[in-house]
Length: 433
View (cartoon, rainbow, N blue to C red):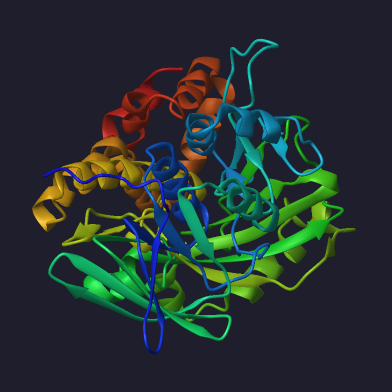
């Protein structure tokens, strides 16, 4: 029998030692993955409860770059929200392209929209996570959504037909029951550990460091984000992402097994590159670090793995959906949340919450939409081990407008992007000017 969605977001039943709440979906985490899920559950009229341990606004260590995927999901949730973002230059900086800098120091500018018109909207933007996550959080307000901030989940249990979350909030204890739970609680996901186990191979994880700076010079006039494949940080890279008000996010990312194997002090490596690399150092000569350098884990999508099971789904970092090459996490988190909400709607309508059903409704859809992109990015990530190859491609692209246009198109055309992972692509470059 199909489920009937109530107009009420929850039911309250006082218990002897706690308050019992009943709803259709429980979401743990109110970052981009949780917000994306909530947006579309509300659009579908599905009551749900969102639980987060933080109080918004709160910071999240990140690169702060949002791709076209971010804009796509926000536009589908509510086009007015995207218009609000694009009309706010004080907090959002539109970005029109990306600059690759090869290990030999040769730069390659790749516009995202080489044939744009005056009416074309910027495909991506940069914004601090402190601001952006609070923006998303504010948009979750809905009669279908009940939010608990500053809440501590103490237990998650599964019984036939129900998930029960026990949490503490404002000195009270709550017991929340729903047929479905969605883990949007990041790389240290409690939901993932509860239902999947901490089974992620360390080789698929990376470490990132972020620092906020003012006074970095040499930014692209159209706010291109920059990836520098410096010899000092390979097989990772150093990024410089411009932000509003003369700020910039500068950081490094590298596979964690490389850090362990080579016993790298990533902070020292980053600061050494900023101070001594001949391409980078002059741009930081008068720059000021405005806050301490902070790090975080990057659960990369290096291979397909289960992201759902009986009565649960995982989204965003909890599902290990960070792009292995670009490090993009925000867009994939929002996108997976959107798909999780659609799967939840289907599960509730059919009153089926089994692992095989959710695999078909969610896992298969996520990997159909994003799987090829992840495979190609994983291949490109492995190519970082070959500095000569980056030098070779960039040198050729700087001399060939057709090759530059091809690479530019790869950011929107996955069939073209797949060429980068094939040896034949480099063979053609070698013998064709």
